[in-house]
Image (cartoon, rainbow, N blue to C red; front, top):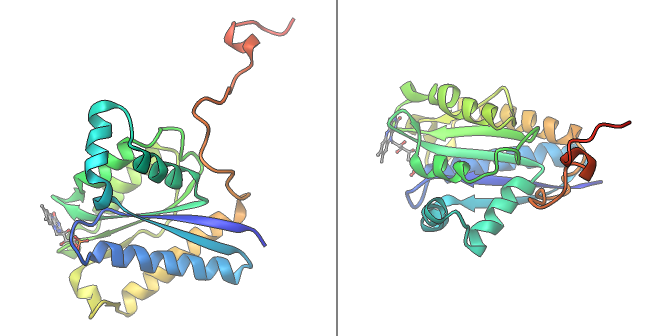
Length: 207
Ligand SMILES: Cc1cc2nc3c(=O)[nH]c(=O)nc-3n(C[C@H](O)[C@H](O)[C@H](O)COP(=O)(O)O)c2cc1C
């Protein structure tokens, strides 16, 4: 049995947050499926609103605070990522985008990702497909076929209704499958690690 970590990023601004609620349910569905497959799972929730000031400071200065560095390492070192945003003006919100602007462009290559969003109207559910999916495609992550959008009418008293519950279960199973197929993560990449030999750096070819 291997130990897997799932980073669960929520960019909701409200408290309580429907985005966090959706993120937690996606995480639980993924965990349950991984456990069913014999894996042990550690969930690492990340509430971006707690790091909003640090995110802006990092954008302005080029350096993360210690707390934000830990969060970035959590996200880039996890076996799988669940990324959920509220829809603002028909796209991800600014906090969500700003945070992922700080993730090294090579750090999520081949990383399984499940995307989700909440919104005031189901008419904006395709923001998942025209905004979030292309962003993670640019980062060369592996995004599950099922993305989950939750509108206010999909909840009754904080409980996902039948159709939303089915989408959550299916998306969680897809993410679990992608995580299960891969070797356990060895943690965040070392930004100072040498990826080329000295010969390659000097432009030499084998003689
Ligand atoms: C500035 C702003 C813009 C918004 N724009 C949209 C929108 O374009 N489409 C939509 O469906 N909901 C929109 N909403 C509603 C939020 O997406 C919705 O309330 C969301 O579920 C809030 O998530 P939270 O409870 O995690 O904060 C907007 C809300 C705000 C504050």
